[in-house]
Image (cartoon, rainbow, N blue to C red; front, side, top):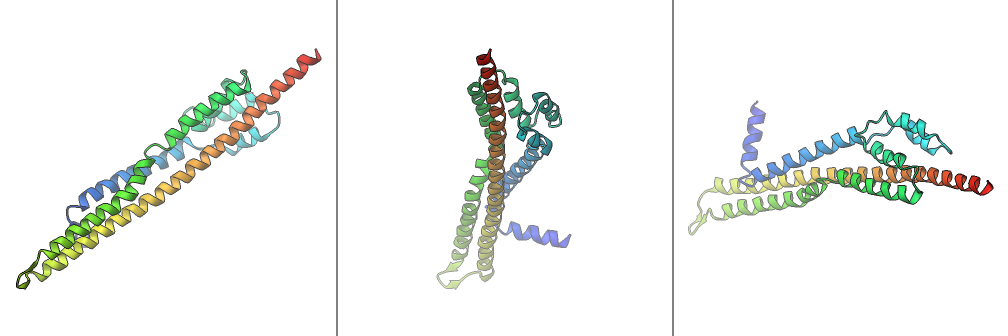
Length: 217
């Protein structure tokens, strides 16, 4: 308990800039937890589905059965369902609908990432502001006859260092989170593109077979 109290007192010594920094920290934490929830809940795909789609001439009914394991809220389900529901249309039509759905998914995955990117820049700047105000407070303690309050000088320097340290810590966490989720998003979109290509290729093969049969008749 004593350690917690001392830590809080140390943080308070950072001055008024600490409060907006903590607000940024809370916002960053909420976004990080939201992204973790989204990727764990809506961006999972079973290996059996990926393996099935890789098979030449797979059955769409089998794909429907596999998709049931994902659930309708799953982004992979939504993407594949758009293709499956339109498989009787020309391949160019299906490709267009799939591209529209992938853009909606990309928009959902990138939601609030710009806030994390902003925090990466804003947190150190707020920390720098705390540094400036702390040093200004220290310089004000120098009077015409010399140093007025030696302990006040050290307090101002402490305020400057604490604010800077907190700002940098928040920025580092936000930077790692932003880069991680950006990479996760890129990998997810690549996987969607790969699956979409396989499914549309299957539709094209069915069209070609129908054309050959029609020509033979």
